[in-house]
Amino acid sequence: MEDSQWLGVGSRVKHPAFGDGVVIRLHKEAYDVCFITYGIKQVGKAYDKWEVMEALPASEAVSYSAAEESLIKILRNFNALEEAVPLGYKWEGGTLVLRPGEEGLKEKEMPIESFFHKIVMVRDRLRVMEQRINSSALSDEEKVNLQQYITRIYGSLTSFNILFQRKEDAFKGAKG
Image (cartoon, rainbow, N blue to C red; front, top):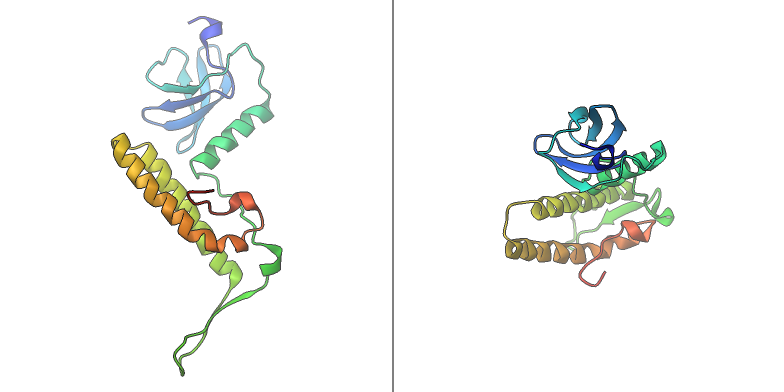
């Protein structure tokens, strides 16, 4: 293989055994690839069984920080990177109170931070489900039908958007 056909640092690949990864270093006969699930593996440059998702030319110099940004983007997309989602400032230290409508029953209180964490976990698990549906062997029609259900779920959860500090972290339904 000519140098011009080799993958450059930051190229994204999908390996049949190791899954999604990013080329992080070039050697004379191999690439160091960081795979989301399996960590860093060395793959020969002649290997042709993987799918190249995004190829960057080997001749193009890519900085370490550019490769790092690419890897972080991929990890976020596959929900393999735990990201802190901040609670809105006005809710910090607050308490969620559930008061029964029936007389004589006890109120339930919990820190808003705990409730918010559970909401964020639901959102993140919906994203993973969405990714798994999209990468599954289902027909396009089945994927679209399931995706519509997920969109409706997101729409149902928009009531909790007041808790998010940043709008980009909030739920978006069909109109969002």
